[in-house]
Image 1 (cartoon, rainbow, N blue to C red):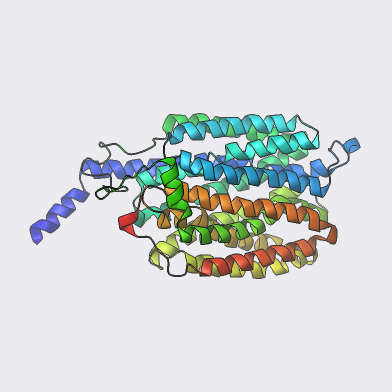
Image 2: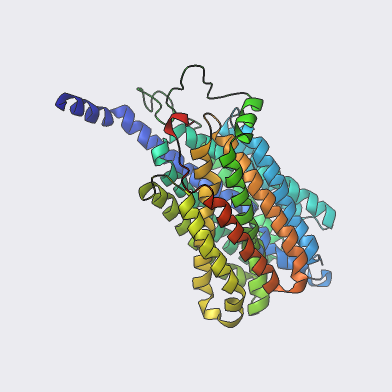
Length: 437
């Protein structure tokens, strides 16, 4: 027995094991930056919304809230469809290639959007941008599944989740100040340059999967499959394995409802704050950057907590935070109107309660509950349903705003409550290591 323990300890301290853990750490932080920077060319439009609505003689485009809602929703629709297709594609094509194509094309489309004026062309360009934005998350999840074993996956995806929250903070600040100093088009041009630069960095430093040098004994994130199991099935096989997994449907419904609420805050929040507190777009955007700051905390804490205290069960944490989000949303409009000094605290809490569940629903839980070899496809399918909900939310919000902000925000609260109910149906669901990709 003593000899066995020494042997196990020696194995854990071998150069190959150390090399692999070092490689894991590098991969996680490269993904942290890479996926996070996608948000520079996605969430930046919220800072341009006041300019899109402004009259033409004031330098804007004179679009209605319904037209703006349609543009915002178009990205979600194409992003969701792209997630479904690209999740399957990411099982068979190099993640580095997919990420580079997505990042560089999205940056170019942001520049094109900034030079455009007609509603229908803007709608088209932003929809195409949504598709290329969808080349971000699922390739990242494929890399995670190849590098990170199940027992550390919640923690590490939580770390990656803090990346796109941190860059959302920067996006609000950078895009908001660019819009204030350069006009609304600045909110498109400056972030595009940042995303293109990050694409070059990613190509230099990201490795798709570990090699035997990283761990000569085994690739521990992907133990050898059993007899007759193909960890890289065909497109149709992966699609069928995904669509016949009932847990993924429940995750998708919950994420879709959460995203409808989430994008109410993320897409319309700067405009709401600007109008109700009478600030400039730059000041409103900088203040609103507090929300994704709370999201950084939520992303990390919830991933760690589900691993540490719930044995990998994600649903209890998701459900609890969504119920809190519902309550915060119900008081949101009143606090913004009548208690400006409390706005930062409220935005921090809302960000925590949105993105703690969101990171679990979009990455960790699908990776847990996917069948072997379909982790990227599972993430893509759940994200597809999530963005269908987000697109619907933008469309609905843009049309009910004629009844006032408070009505729209109460609808956001109802969506958060319904998302909690859907998540509760997976209360005891957890990963099965023998079925992991």
